[in-house]
Image (cartoon, rainbow, N blue to C red; front, side, top):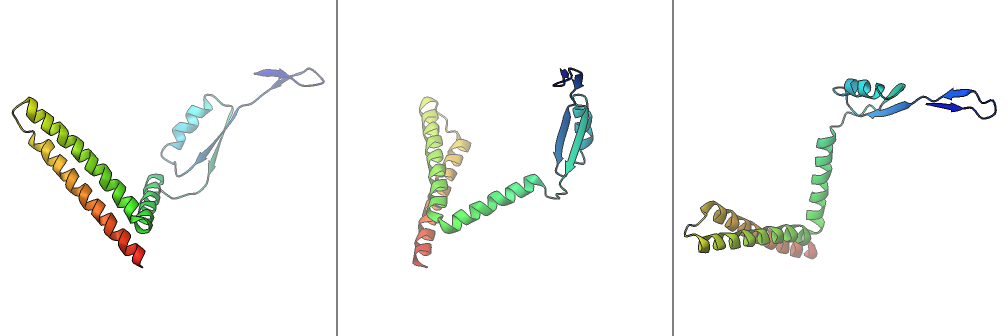
Length: 138
């Protein structure tokens, strides 16, 4: 890409610089630098020295947040999850009953999954109610 310098009108060549932050990327950084060098004049790799596994760290943060919510607001946490499981179980149960009315066979696997979702959902709702009462008392 050529442009003129202001004032003297001489051509000025612009360079393209690619800056890439690297976060424990030793397996992939070589290929990335080669690909980037096809499109850029210079490639700058910035290593922050981190040793965390991003996936594991993200899951740890998610589990920590879920633990905090379950301890501080158990009715919301267990009640919402239990309600969702119960509704899914009921919907799957309706599908089982519809399939039974159309054909004369009972889809046993789907019926068991429906019953399992409903039972776990109801237990979760009651767990949330009990923990909510216990948290309020203390």
